[in-house]
Image (cartoon, rainbow, N blue to C red; front, side, top):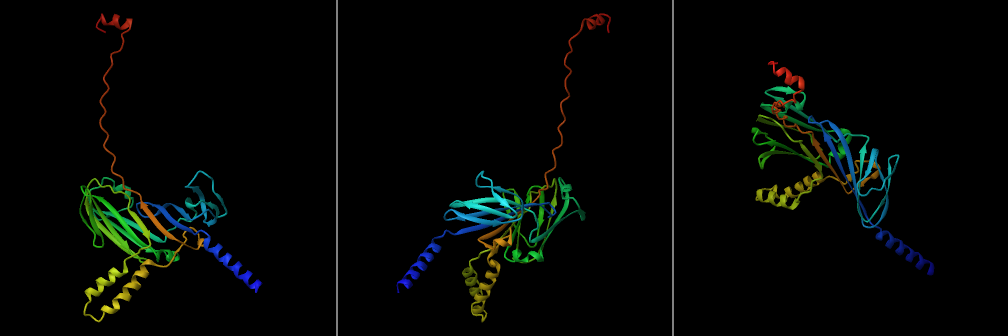
Length: 309
């Protein structure tokens, strides 16, 4: 009996010790700079940790370089493993991944007055009928990431230099003197968009693309659908259908993008930005002609002046 009591006490102590351990949450934010045509130029991952108490953690990732973003202390990183001594609170470090591939293949094409423009930067200061076409396709080998991510794409055009802006699949809104053109791509889907405008002195800031896991108020959509279908036999079936739809949008647990050895993490986000098409350089202002400064006359000059020289 005493032996059984001792075992029970030991189990209780072990259980208490396990429940007392602090929880470590990991979030990853993937930042990528794209060309104006959509090719990946650079990428880095910010690994963010939140701990209730100091913890020792091994984080995995194949990086060309790592940087401690929380303090000036160097990181213990070797052969794809970062040995981290996490303080209570938050800790961040950045890694430049060796493999710079996104879950989506993004292609952006430009046409001016019906003619393709190979170099988007050549559109700086352009005038005419501009068409911008964007295609977003899921990379099959990375479908597990794209399947849980909703993309929000935002393009901004100057309202003074871009007129008659049209795009059938976009939400277009005024933002000060600018026009914002916003698109949504649902998880795991491919999509294509086209925007046209009459432009002059054309310039455009970078296109912003955010990938994140979408959460929605399921009950709100269920109530709205049931009210719209009141009296219809489908009214009772629409609730479960919307519930399944929202769950599909939210996806399953986020898998680490930095390295699958990290397993599932608390959250994963993508923040992408294309290069801007810069405004044309201002025309050089004519410089004032330098005025001749009087030169000090020499004795010879004075002498020659006597003879009209």
